[in-house]
Image (cartoon, rainbow, N blue to C red; front, side, top):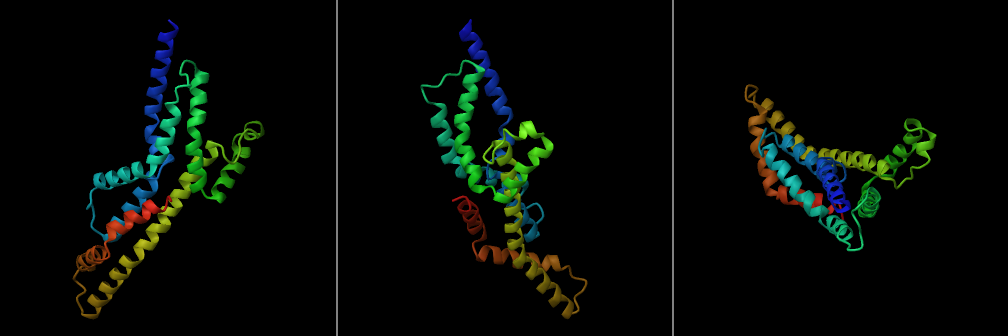
Length: 217
């Protein structure tokens, strides 16, 4: 009977962890930043739904798995320790605490200090003094939102810099068409081939992917 209860508890915990996978993919990995940057680049190119969302999400997922592979390896090493037990809630809590250490180090490395300080200070106002006293700058409830905000901030910074050359092409094409009196011609139709040519000429996809991956070194 104890063995049966242990198996049932393990099954419940595993199902709960699977339910949290989408949150983990967005909240504590590179997925959010990579996705936002790719979508901004597509909008800057002005090619509508090319590449389609499925392709961009697939690229983001592959890069996220690649970046998180060392982290996943550390967690797997901890979780497969033969000395660990998975029989009670306390056992699972201890495993979670040990497995959270590599995640905590990753979040500390990539979460901005300003964002961490804000969420740490906000706990005193939102949670009350008693609960806030238990929170430290390295607590996951502080690190996860700080990391997510930091990632979105960096994504829009990268997107802004990538948008500028394409915006310059749009302005140049519009100015040339107006000077030639071709005001009935859509500037977008003329600008898109030039933007695609520029992006291909500088090997844009490779450089973009390389830059995103190396931002987590």
